[in-house]
Length: 345
Image (cartoon, rainbow, N blue to C red; front, side, top):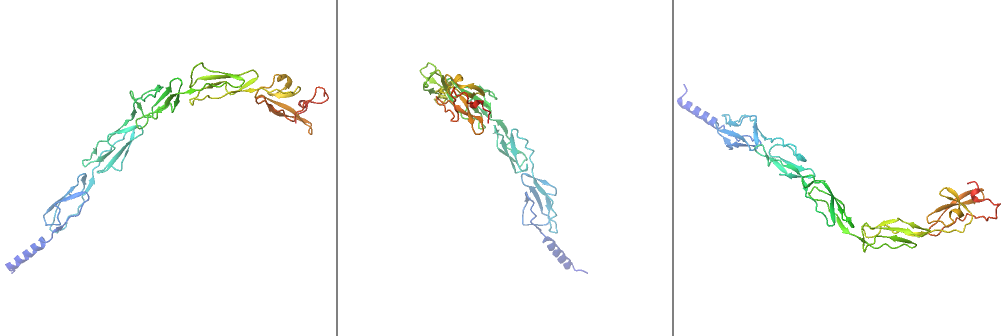
């Protein structure tokens, strides 16, 4: 028969053994908080896992009781980030992101010609919403361009009421006798302003000088201005070299300086030459002389091969060099054959 004292001792030892099996600090679950958090727990004590703000529980239990064994049950709880809704497509812009999960951010940019009306970034909040709200890309506009002094607006078609949109253009022109320095066309830029405006300046030219052996006509005015014109001509048997009409340029000078070139006279009395592809008698065709710039080809003999060839000569301001190979025959040397009448080489 077991004594009552032995029974009491056995029960006390069993109670001490059971009471000594405390639970350790529970394992950590990412993005969660344990309440209460202690270094050890007595059997029967409860703990609760709470997912941190911005995270939600996925699977597993959240409340556990320390058992008599002193070992926490297997915990399969996961705290995952909240997911914000699809941010959408930014019209006339772009959205840059990695994920739509808390606490990530998205960034917004607009295409050239548009500006952000709102924030350039938004964050996925603890509640699963974007903050601040995504922006919109509004078109950039330019106010009507300023008109330079001595200029008028030739072409201007605003696309947005009285304003212009990115890449719209305007065209200026200067008042009469004013020259434009710069680009006549200006463009609305992505910064909402116009490219550099041109400048219109009054330009004066000196009176054109009369060429030797010629004349010049120009407007009967006290001052000659930009775009004014002058016409040139030459006296008889002189040839105008350069344009007949010249113009006062934006640089304050004339577009050209024509001159009058003298004709050429030759003492040749008998020669057949090529002129503009045809054989002509020199003394008949050029009885008044050759005009400046005119060309003829003289016939010469190749005595060794007994054939003929041509060499060109040109009248240049009263001077012409007859080829040395050309031989002019006397009218009395009727028995000699002219070079032009010999077969070509």
